[in-house]
Length: 114
Length: 331
Image 1 (tube, rainbow over the protein chains, first blue to last red):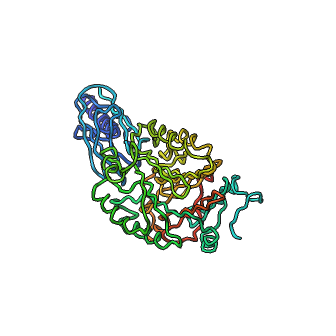
Image 2 (image 1 turned 135 degrees about the vertical axis):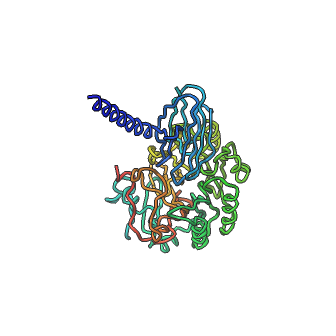
Image 3 (image 1 turned 90 degrees about the vertical axis):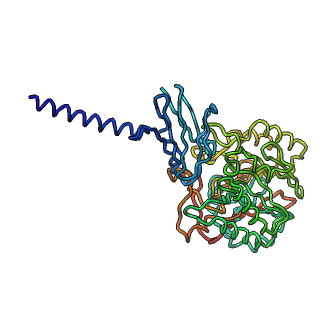
């Protein structure tokens, strides 16, 4: 009975870890604990990213045209990112930070800092 | 007569069928003549004969989207294809009075990219080149460098107008101060300038407007339109002949709305997909042998008296291909 219980805990833990790992990877969190947004096909993914305060977020341009990451409220602004170039910004204060690509202004995204 | 569409015939120039027929020729070596809003078209293969009968007083060329600095598939040498476009201009039967470049001169707004463009364009046999910026020319500095190089005598963000042989030309800038989620923008300052600029003109003055992003809603989902273009066009309603030349979408499209003819030019660098046919408007990767059939120049002729503008799209290579479907055909 005890063996079965231990086995179950291990199994559930493994499942939780798997689910947690997958969901956070899809949410932009890498295993190293930093957060990433990918720019691909003229869109930000994930378009909405929720992070704890004090987190560094890194955007990577995977398109073969340049993009940038510009805060609507002028809180941060990346230089132009050519293919595979990155930009990082650390969010210290809680709030919602809307941003867009000022070159292709239909491209929008937001970071929610909790 | 081939594909000659006459007003009053069963295939008149401005109904849907006639328009689509014209669109089928766009970008594949087509010749357009617009008279009082009526569009006639025939294949470029008949051009030498036609051109002789259309020897107008004004001939100019539009080139667009040279993207100097771009070096990825399907074109790793955009300087070479720009040079080929210039060779095509220099071989025209009527040398152009001037050339309009409708933006995206460079790919990344780098000084060396602007330098290369300037050097290459010196090869054009023409008196002058007029410019408007594309969004790729105003990166990082909100257009400061572009204005230093090309903005002499221009207003605000680089908009300007000039007259040539009775035709009024207006270069508009719709790539600055773009709003999140929005399309191209002209902005209140430029709109106010435009209203004043055309106030003094007689309604019979032919107008040619050139700007980078289309001034009509080609495909807003991809940002292919200008938020306040209707306001600008309202100032041009009273004019009998308005031609709007744009770039940005790297393919030819044409639309006639009353007395306004909208036309977009091919790029000299790389093609982009037709609206909605790809996940994004990123560069279209085509086989090397097909590339030059999708790049090219636009030649425009004005004939005084009948207020007509003849618009000819010439690809760098292969003039006899069948056309691409128009936006209207896809919907």
